[in-house]
Length: 349
Image (cartoon, rainbow, N blue to C red):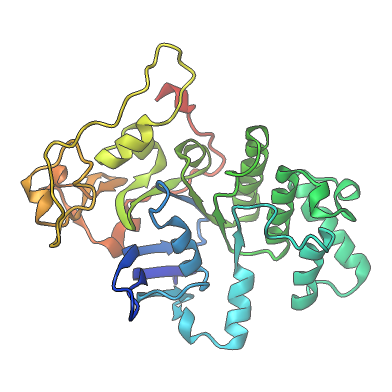
């Protein structure tokens, strides 16, 4: 079966112009595949600057990779015709981080719903359009009579974000890429938005790439997880395995920073590096400067992606000798989506 969307050895570099030789590698030889059968939720996590948003933009064709390619139904995005590009825009939808900036404040919120319907000819009559809009709003927990006809500033952040979820659903996409969709709304509303995304996956068969820095919400909503560090994959696999028993030192650091409701639990400072490492120019592990388990081999070689478990792999020399997974085969460690299963409470981790 042909993948809906596939990134093959994608590298994205910013900078390096004629007058400025400095550059930033936002993505480094990244590959992933998005299938629609079965529909899954894959989280992409990492701290700020890890390349998450760049990945979202590259997958949607909003930014061209420096090298590598992104394929839609087996064809490079760069080679799509106008009709194919139009279909891609319908099949792959984006939910952005800021639930206010995506709106034009001079238009009522109705505009973000009616505009794509008119451009794609989704409704033949005004009554049909009104009915479709009402249905998707109710699906995400909004009342049409309390939402339509209002300006963006008259809705809460959670309501604005749910309107964007409704907009994505309106087009009946096969994939939604959600870039930090709950980071700028109240904690009390995050569960509602996440619940809407999970419902789109389970009831409507939509695959979701959930991009976040928050491991807690990634654990709650996802089937699989990709941990990025400075544009490279650090750990990948079944979200339950990765979060509950992290193997890569960087993933352990991320999990250790999660606040838990335990008054006896003390905050742990980041462990000191195992060795002092000066600036390196040749091949080396990107995490070597911060790694408490660093060794000499980390300063002169790039670690492979080693299979730690059946459904998990880590890019760390601690597991050298284990079977190596090629970066374009890392989806082989993903678990089968658990339809309808509720994740285990993170507090018990």
